[in-house]
Image (cartoon, rainbow, N blue to C red):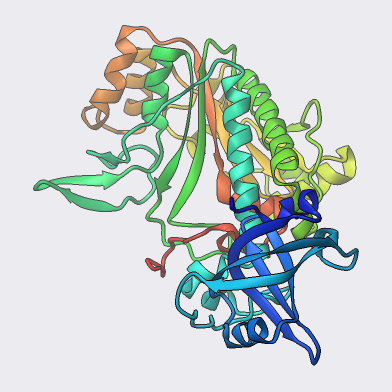
Length: 428
């Protein structure tokens, strides 16, 4: 008999079926016992009346893996309006050792450190797994949206030979006796691949050895990177980003509706044109000094409130960041060279995306490095490609975990990360 999932039970009323999953909860009443079985699709209620089967159920522990064969009957008070009666129950493994928290409760009450210490079991809780389902749906939407726009998915090295790209601290390692580093991003490689495919994207891990210990930072996170050629300026990149976000959120609604319901999340609308303010104006709106070189988290929050009040938008572009705060490969604003053709996208008052137009002429790279007092040699393999013809191009990168945290309202990015890596955690 082929196994079915819990959400398929309503289509099998009157039939004998086989379920398999985890013992989510047992309710042992005087005349009857209820066995709640959890599988990848949800919960199924099994009604146990036979004394021998009840004795089996009484001996089970929560999280033991079992197989149930029984008849499906309608019951409006049961999950999905059906339940399984006259069952046989067969353990598919030894009795499970109960985890240090109750997974059957609506809210996982254990502290976040305890959840992370026991992540393989904590992630089974519907609220934790729901966030990961939303994450998976968002990535599917990211890929699908870009595939429809003739982008090509690429896969670039995560071990590199120099610690150069953004000034961020890097993780050093030994590469057959030579120094090497975990990649801070695929930035250089995705630019070079524009010279091959014109439009590329990548989904992959990036590593930042920055000693942050905040609710919004991880040392390893998943970056959704995009780069496209033949742009006029950064505004073309912003248009692609807007459409990509809309596609991601549409995919979340389509593929993870149950997870959204579990978490009580309403997906925001992406405006047809996301409001944008120049960095200089953003400082005024946020009440920051006019000579501030960057936006602090408090400034971002103020701008998020302004965008919601003035434009009814959860999203806001801040454009024209000072060149002094942007990587050397960023294209300056031709009309205001002290500012860049770069941008950040704020989502509910927090930076979610950084992007912009890049330099594309070899001579401009030489000049940019010289202006910053940096030698060309560490960048030689990257800069050399620009001698051989590169189109005007630009791109962006979305931090997946931060996106999901903002969407779900999680207080800490670790709540939506399966096995987070940060300043303190390398296990499990």
